[in-house]
Image 1 (cartoon, rainbow, N blue to C red):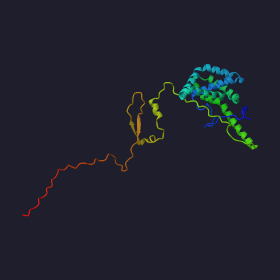
Image 2 (image 1 turned 30 degrees about the vertical axis):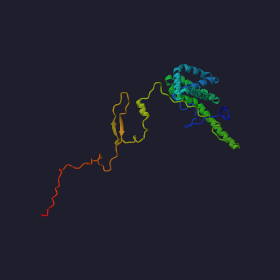
Image 3 (image 1 turned 180 degrees about the vertical axis):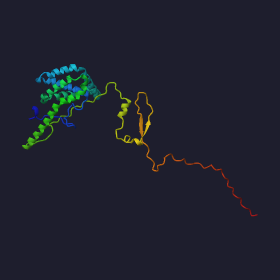
Image 4 (image 1 turned 180 degrees about the horizontal axis):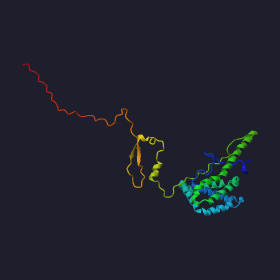
Length: 283
């Protein structure tokens, strides 16, 4: 039987390069992580009443205690989507929100998810608002753990089912999932705050050559430091540059420009007139 009375032939995500099942919670920013934690606790408030009213009461308290920080996180996520998707920002975010809500509301996992949600809700209530963004990625990973464990159990069920059918002569096609879930939408990265402009120094850092290139492998004994001219006020101009010396000559002598070649006659000596003798006469 499938684990936790799950449906047969259920789709599960594929794994990422770290061996984790790929979900919409992977690799998100701190603001997105905090907002996903809020969505997870909202799902718990709506679906965990059979285990008591704690999840619902906690959620209402969280909105009252941490309301300003949650609103700021929501605004930051909105800005990320607007920068990344422009006019399609609202639709893109709504699609991801649907995926996240459905993920945390997966019926076979609810009984394992609710106690974890109550534990995370208690931690969140006891944490100062200034620390929420720092703790959000850790809480999100904790809330996702029951689902990662369920996917692993379901994958193991598929493997054992294939082995059983093979031993008893059934025709078997061994696959990880009957219909693997497509990769979830990926939330955008953190956008710069409104009015932010790159500085001269940040532009230099962005265009700096990677370590280990030809310029960076020169030793200190064979390089010369040249001081740069002062730049404009407020600009972070690099203070020095490294210049590579020329290779030494094979003879060891100082190499310089060639000696000038004479192109005119040498007039340093006074001119001489050669006098030829006259021919003798027959007299």
